[in-house]
Length: 174
Length: 461
Image (cartoon, each protein chain N blue to C red):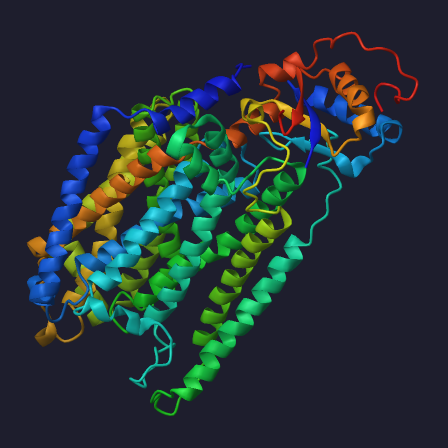
């Protein structure tokens, strides 16, 4: 993967760069999907691509809970029938104990599904890092374009710089 | 409006990870010695038999189960408090949450050991797991002790994930600043985090879901611990109030533990700028409220027992009011109600570090005693007097108990050397939202002169 990116000192400058890239994408031969961004904190209040993101994570968590709860029910009911304990004519599979285990397993299912769906949808772990610069940890905001056309490289660098980039770099660095 | 510096925050929070003073090694050495002594005592108990403890007819639940209930209660410091504060978007929570979440994980680990320590043959604890075996036996799902296993496992899993998720961006921060083995270590823990919009969005969504899910789990855990007692027909255990009473007590002791941990971290790592009297004031108010809630439950429980006037319950009741536990009972009331009320209801005391710490210390002591008084007196005075007895802890139990407090402190020390103890990105986010970061001001400075371009939208679009 190749990229050209600028490092911006604050969210407002990054937002400006983002707008310029979106506006000049058709001229420079890329679209919004090629624009990359990295920041050391979420920037929800700025128009940087955070907004309007949809994810089925809450539904997946609910589904995970359902699967967990169902597993819990079968764990308790089937195995208690397979290994019946003397209960003095009381039900072998009793409502309340079953309900408690089902409840805990439901929650466990939801928790594990949330964790797994985070890893999958955020593409983690991602050991071979994508476009990134350690300056992001210093608070800089990285805005760039992935796999830009060589023909428009200089124009892209100019656009990023004009938007207020403190530095413009190539990835991987040459 | 205070001006905060993200660079200084990085420096202040990451400093403990790379610099270690001789005091750290000295304190760690002392704590490790106590833990080793406890380990030796435990090995001695396993080798010799459970008879070396003070557990004997009719009291088979003593210090060990007291510790179990106590530490599970302390575990409510973190995840529960953190989740509530996250859901209510309490902004003052930001420097506090990670300290709290770490307490939960370590307290659960320690608390979860006690049912095993308490077993006569601890090496057979795996019989609790439901798996087919040639023994042809199966765990009894009707037993609250098995519910404990499910509840604590779920809570430990959830709390560990709840602690880990928001540390991923901070691990990435350390990775970028570290060298050598630390770079590899934090690179591994950060999972290759780069901070793309999608990653941030998913992380925040996951944290919201986790905060919603973990709350009922936390409540269920201590409710189920209370049912270990309330499901048994033992005088003063078989009570409908035990569930909420235990949950309230857990939150109460959890907040106290959090205040103490924060004060120590603040002093040890020079985090005065981030853990301020303001935070102690807020937590002090919560502690005061929970002190009153705790007192309400104590009164509700004792009044109904006294009014019912049933002989078996009154025997237990009087053993704590006029018998051998009287001094302990009133000392508990002083620790859990009188001292916190006197200190925390006065703003001048509450709005300091010392006031809430003194109150919290007495609360932690008082809550341990409370757990002991819930467990031991009813077993000593169970129904007919011919079965009554007296419990006295042995040196083995006392050593193991001391060891767990040392283990908690040691684990917390090691954690604070490996993980940024304050969530850096959440602090920065808070400053950004409150407009307190200098660079937000810098963003209003004019940019370099831009060449006019026809293809750009008008400003403000």
